[in-house]
Length: 288
Image (cartoon, rainbow, N blue to C red; front, side, top):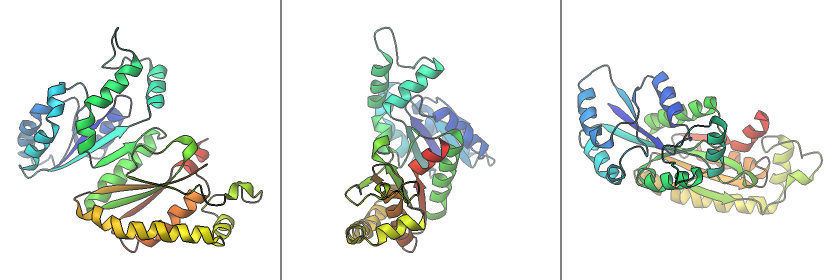
């Protein structure tokens, strides 16, 4: 049996993720007291129709239980159950906006604790879970369809290959992705945005690629980044990680970062079993 523990701060999309996993064939349970997880896993393991289980664990658990998260997961591991911890999160300003829009009450807010304070308290309470999680998804800019696609890619990709690398471009002006493991900055390179004929293109277009291909500094930075990753990604792979996100950013997330992600991903498709590419802020522009 495969078990996915779904956690994260309130408003980050945990309930939506559980519904999506249910649609993908998982037997889903939300808000389970963490101490009962080993017992429930034992019970469901005896049911042959339950091969995939997803359990929601969040700050509604007692703080003392959350502190024992590593111990509980280890207890389930020793039963021969494959456990993956998925942690969803979003920027504080996004969480605040989502609660303002829905007018829901945060589970940790009270007369003496503001919504902003509740969000920060929840981050502290869930730190043991976030630290243990192998899969992180930043939902700040995702809609439900994009979240579903990422869940499929990350969970199914992990099952197929055992180690998946996501190369992601992003715009610094929209923030660093919360789910990034390694972050590289390519804003030092010449910006095609200032070329009128290239401004409305992206790093996926031939004109931008040609502009950057002809810059010696681009070649130098590509050599340095690819050399670093060729040396160190195998070490991450051997350290029992199942998923790694490499984020490459530029100012607007349209030209330099997209170009570099595509070029490096092309290299690593010959080196690694499962490589994914995401251009976060091209997607943002297209949605707008």
